[in-house]
Structure formats: structure tokens, C-alpha cells
Image 1 (cartoon, helix red, strand yellow):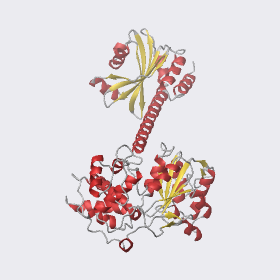
Image 2 (image 1 turned 45 degrees about the vertical axis):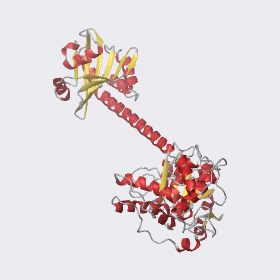
Image 3 (image 1 turned 90 degrees about the horizontal axis):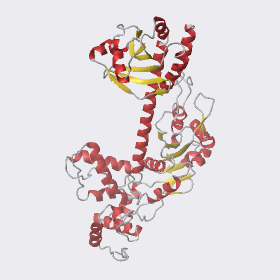
Length: 534
């Protein structure tokens, strides 16, 4: 037959499938009509451990891909790695004549057979062998060897491609497994790391539980450092999209010239430096959630693109002409009044109303002072671990009272920094927070706090009046603790023990709670509720 026909047909079959076993079997069905062939074997050499690994075998019954390693003696390894030692193709009409083939023959229980071995060498490196075997001795001639030598290169390329493909599948499965594990770990901690979820943030969390299962946009409003990103994480983790990605974007931290490319992606050649196609944050968040922090900082041209995402559920890359469909839940956040920005012409009115489908107001820390003890405990434990402290320092007498009276203009973020700074300066001593500024004049004069509310147009107001959550600034620590316990007892309807009892919410032993209540003069008994006026 024509050698070119043999080369073309064999190449078509060996490269016709990424499943190298199936490709090898199709090659056997063809080859056995041209030359003696009862079996084809593909091996790969592993120089790190000195083994010849059987990748695939094919005979008239089909193919087998059960990896099996054949250890090579040290002197044989040197011969294998010497690409000049052997011809690319060699005939062995008796398998016991060759020390390398002998090891394979012993493992595969060959006897009384002949083989042709093609050494697969790519870029002057031996990567494996393609062996054709026929039962009986003296079955092959030099003409057969010349024909087999023609398929050396396509077989080597097919083997290398198959192994790279298998490695990609393995890495893909590893990444998917890691992703599942991380999402499971996040779901375990949903709610557990939101300090104040049952107290100062209770109203906000009640809204989170309502909106998380839904697909519409959510707008988080609150001062800088009040915990908007934590609430956004909770919305994602509690939603049906929690197995998808959560992409966070700080809209104020990206230069205006790059914001469109970062959010929506770009096509190759769209601008100087765009050397390849690139997916934007919205495409990466597909089937998940995107959190647009400080959305009020977006320039007008980007707002127009964002409006299209909300209306059409698609993005158009910079320099592209074909829209890309995306399925993304949008959670945005702002510490500024979007309504004021709209009146100033800095924010699109139509986009504002699209984003503000479900607004959630997050109160500043000064309006939920009862959360401060739990937050301090949380930050002391976490920062101690991060700083590698051998033990966790305790608070100095009066330190907690000082923290509760402080106005916290930087909110929870400032509290975390204050705790970390105190740990660094503590030198193993008590934490005293002596470097705190004096409490606000408002807190000293009124003894009351304001409650943040949404006035219906996107601005956050703090109307004057007494807050049910904030204790007067002049109270001692015992008075604050007593007020805290009374509030929890009211929330639980007087229930002390059990899953939703006051002891569980406070993280205390029920007996300890009863002792504290008795100490503070808070009545409990059959009705389990504190007496009025106590």
C-alpha cells in the first residue's frame, strides 16, 4: 500500500479522540489489516521514579486504561534516557532479547511473541513508547519497521496532548472540590460571625432573611465602616446562589479610565495594552452575586452600562459588538446620599430607582452600643490569633465602659483597629484603651442615641429621641449588663434555657445567668419574665 495513505489514516485515528485508549483501539482495527497486530500498547516514561507506565492497551476485545507502572533497573533507565542509544524503531522477534521489552513482557505475561517498538521522542526527550505485538516469533520484517516508523511523531503528539488534557481535568476537579469545600465552610459560619445579628443588627438581618432568596437588586445604606460588606456576604450565603461566586468591587478604588474594562471586560485590541480578550467582574459573577461597594462613585458612562445590565441581563465588553448574557444578583452599597447625587446630576435617576428595589439601612455603631461588648470579645480573640499572642489579654476595669461611651465615628472598623492597637501596646497587661478620644458631647448631654431610618428617598436620617437599644452614657458596667439581660429576657419571653433561650443567646451557662439576674435584682420564676420596674 501507499505509505502516505497509512500515515494519514493512522494519524487521523490516533488524534481522533482525547481518550487515548479509544484512539489506540481504532488504530488497532486499522493496523491489523496492514501488518501483524494482536495488541497495541502505549507507555510513558517517568524519569522521577524510573518507571515505564502503561497508559493504554488495545486488543480485539477493546481497550484498557488502568495505569500500571513497570519499574526499570538502574542500568536500563540510563539506556531509556539516552535518545541516541537506540533507533527510533526497533524489531524484537523474541521479546526476551531486549532488556527493556523483557520487563514489560513479564508484567503483561507475554510469551512466544514478536514486537515493534517505536520510541516517542519530542524535542530530544524520550516520553514513551508505542508497541505493536503479534503472537509467534519472526513475525516482523524491516519493511514493517519502516512503516511503523512513520507514525512515531503523530503518536508522540497524541500521547502528550492526552496527558495534558487529563491533567487539566484533574486540576479542574481539584478546583471544583476546593470551591465546594470553601462554600461549605462559609455556609457553616453564616450568621455565626455576624456579631449583633440578634440585637443591634436584628432589624437589618430580618430584612436580609427576606431578600436573600429573591433575585432583585439590594441597596445597602450605612456609614463607612458599619459592616455593609458583611451584610452583603450574608445575603449571598443565604441565597440559592451560594454555590456560585461572590465578586466584590470597590467602585471608588478603580480609576475612571479602567472601570468599564474591570466591570464589563474588553476585547483584544480595544485599547492600548488590550493584548487578549478579558472577562469583566460581571461575567465572573455569573450564577452568583456581585457586590458594588460605594456605587455612588461610578462615573456616568459606567452607570449607563450598569443600567443595561439591570434591564437586559447582559453586558457588552469594551470594544465588543456582541452582548454577553449574565445571570447575576446585584447588591450595591453606599455611604453617601444617592438622592442628593441624583439632584446634583452626578447619579442617574433611572439607575437609582433600579438599584433601590429593596433598601436596607445598617445602623452605625453608636446606635447599637449593646453590641460593643460582644464585638470587643470577638475582635480580641481574632486579633490575638492574628498577632500570634500566646494568651488573650483581658480588659482593665472600666475599659468596657469607656468603649461603650465613645461615639465611634469610624464604626465597627474603628473598633477593630482600636482593639488591635491596644493588643499591640498591651505587653501582656490589661487592655485599657487610654488613647480613645473623649466621648461625644451629644452622648454626654442627652444620654440618648438616634436610630437610623430610611426616609423613603435614599438618605439616612437620625431623628432625635430615646433609643431602646442604647443605654444612658452615665451607666456603670453592671447597669449596662443588667439592661442587656432584661432586653434579652424580653426577646425570649422569659425563657432562660434551651436552644432559643436567653442563656444560649448570651453565651452563658443557665445557672450563671440566674446568678447574675439574682445579683442585679431581675426577677425570674415560673413566668420566667423580669418584673416590671426591676
